[in-house]
Length: 548
Image (tube, rainbow, N blue to C red; front, top):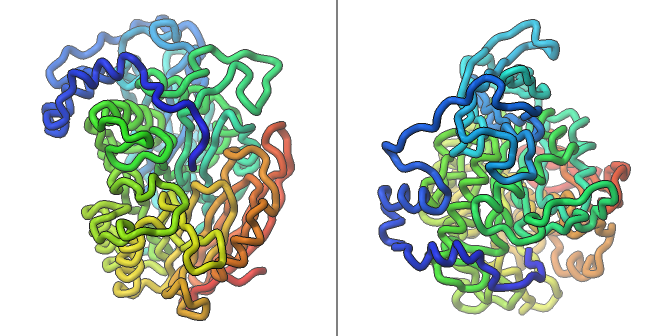
């Protein structure tokens, strides 16, 4: 989503770094390591390891940012925390030594931790901003577990997680939630507080976990009267320190902490975790790629540090493999996409525009060749009842007028129609009968039928797209935004449109999928009630949304 902001404000240090930056060398393994060390203060291979922190060096409670789990498999799950006694303060004033800290972890069958099943120890390294990623293995499939961390005398809050069923199993059901777009400066994460009390097996975050925009001393639309945020939040994030501090701000929110502690999360990014509307190595202003790739390296580094992700996702310079596949027994296969890192630059600067010839260039790609091939191979190999594709931007066609030459969003899949056609044709050729796309980005709830021919409303329906609204982005919203009637008239496959904040829950079983669109009326003040605005089902083997 494009938002007004001051353009061209690049950090002076980043510009200076870019002036001495050799992109060709950066894109080699050795060059990437050296450039990453230069731009993020990471040691290159062979550098001396930081000393071990002595007992008593952490004098304040360090688990201020809570705990999280993610990417569950039948035998394991990633556990996450970060040591941050003073999370809003940059080093060296953040209450931590410039040393590695020993952290113990525990997994139990019960909330009181009387039945421990796994224990271990790991290091929280200053080079990783004292974050902890434990890839806990040896767990039983399809089981709830509880986990926590210890360091010195301090014990973290507990978290609850769940492993996936065995790949060959057929569970009775799966319940999930889809969330996206949580701009701190646009309001309270009230919807996440409600989500923490839902009965779901996992949460899928579809992007815009944080925003790069400045957050005022009063927290923007939160309009704090009981606190004043530090001045360094009141600027756009550009450097690694900027991004790390912004994650600390977001993760200090109690509703976000509660939702992370309640369920395992699968995360993917959109644009704002780095910069608005970027595409591959191109930023939104057309700046030199060298400087932007340094910024992207910092953003990707901070993203990995602050999410429950495994080591294969650890970025190498400005590159990070985030697309990945998970199974929930034979009930569902999840192909999580990255529609930012590999895409070619948007046509017409990513705006709403009547498509020109450049949009139909077969080389104009949303996914890049490798990811697209991986996705189509996954469709061909799937034996799941439901093929679910969590991703970022709207896949279905969206006209904003009923005219034949209507403008379309060049930042969404409408701006990459050949790539979309190859993906949908690949799903059909592979025999995928129950395609479900989960989408964020646009700050509204939409329910859409995916059509074989967008110009023919009676053409075959080949899948379902569920678009979750933002958690806060866009502030309060309304049930019927100003363009509600125009979009409903222009898009017969659009079955539902609501502009309030919220999330979507989905229940999958072998016979049908049910989606419930949850909303809150206000995010600029805390405490709004949760409501279900609409519910739809789609029957297995007979795609198409039916209101219930």
